[in-house]
Image 1: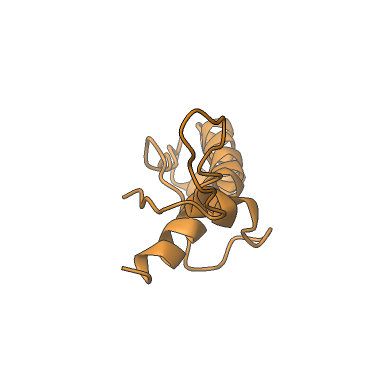
Image 2: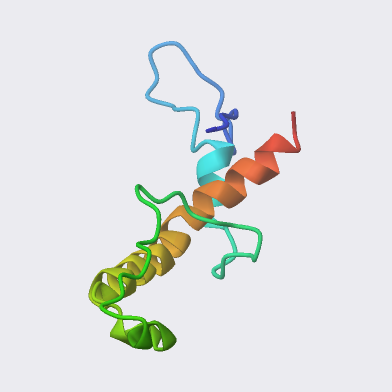
Length: 100
């Protein structure tokens, strides 16, 4: 859920002027989110992590021998990237949720 908020730095509006309301509080919080995602945060992924596909029972002992190992690694890389991309907005939304 995306939370909305009023302006972070409100400016008075005057008739006929070019003044604006300023950036939203949510955008301000996004810009100032901690750089490192906290442990509670899990990004939204379009698919689940692929389950390993084994060629035989012996290969099951070694994770790197799964037939779809590359797909699993690619998903893990994307998951880590999405943690950092989605984190600032999730952090801002959690802060704003407490303000309701």
